[in-house]
Length: 513
Ligand code: XMP
Image (cartoon, rainbow, N blue to C red; front, top):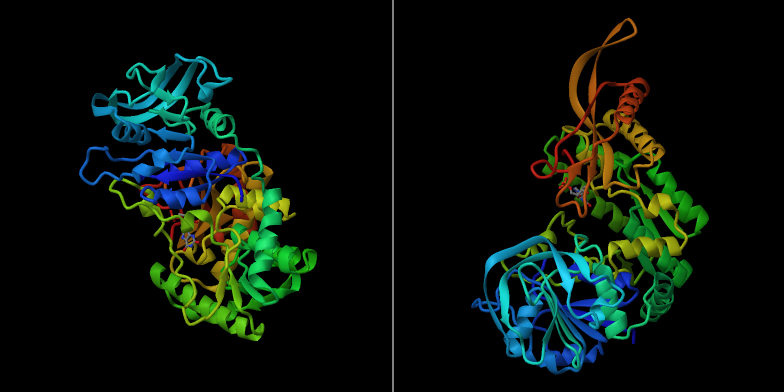
């Protein structure tokens, strides 16, 4: 069994970050609900347990509490923030409402350098706090090992049991050396090796896919995005020609998108690829439609129709493969104040109809996005695919305001190609979340040579974001902006004005629609 750390989720917005940090230490981690029975946890034979933070107070009526038997599993346990309160609550300590809410940056002073969590770390550390309640009496047999300005129990330990409590968050970037604290826990305390790498994962996944699929055939909808591309490459490695990929051209793709997919998967990897060019069908259905929601619905429905017909033509297959990721399958904890619970419903694409009777193969469903990218590199996919920016399913249709026409698609495709080229040339493309062009179907007057023009406007959007939920516009250098505007207006027929969007999200969205 893969060595692993189990993280119990008490509703912290950082639970997934903890899981990722553990995996960055090359140790596998699993997130489970806070009330998972101890025997289920024990069945996984975890090398260690982490109790996440959470927005509650242990004394609140509806406080999320774990199975008390988790403290008797004989497994090293790290409680973060709310996790410390749990130690106090179950093991004889006391928590009270703090006078001062400790929030933000603080300085931690390690008072017991022998504590394994702080091995090879300096005595003073910058840490990030976010808690209101305060430990006022240590749980039995615990000792303080570090203090902050506000708390004499900022870090505590029960050495013989391997229990540790941290009032601060080691998982966030504002605790710069937090990764080392987590590494000390998983390697130093729990004794985990460093076996969780994408290279090892490929072997394991290939075996699992072969065992699941046997001699049956598998269909995969390839969009050219990171997830479906990596899933395709992995499945192809495992089952070769038993896999058929279907790529649908919905008429609202960017420049070169279809070519890249055909080049990489068809010619290079020699994947069995069905290219469905449904451009005409999509664009005919979008004719005259201006409402953004209707555009999305038409594209969604038409996609299912085209895809379904293509699967029939591809011949009988038992399995449908999907690039589902770990964050989509983690059951979020429905606790008030847990923003992670809201994130899931965002842009839910809706999936395929139930009557399509396939069994699912989801070879990425225990991976985070950053791991999928590493896996893609390991499988030999080009940077252009592995590190590409997110692109919405409804494609250019959400970037052409108003009606989507073939001419407008052509204009936007040309403008967007220039944005991508210049962003890549400046070295910024792979550093930011998204950068793209938007077509505004309003016309304004301009002059070109001796002629008066009356053409469309292109808006350039460049944003920085962690997850697409919030975003900041990127302060692109003036000379880059100048180059973008000049190239777009000179090279793209039908455009005579270029503007730069300086709206953050909120209040704006990333896409214009
Ligand atoms: P907004 O525009 O809501 O976008 O700020 C947030 C992120 O989601 C992407 N996006 C979509 N992705 N299907 C998708 O797969 C969609 O319909 C869709 N709409 C927006 C957007 O590009 C941004 O990264």
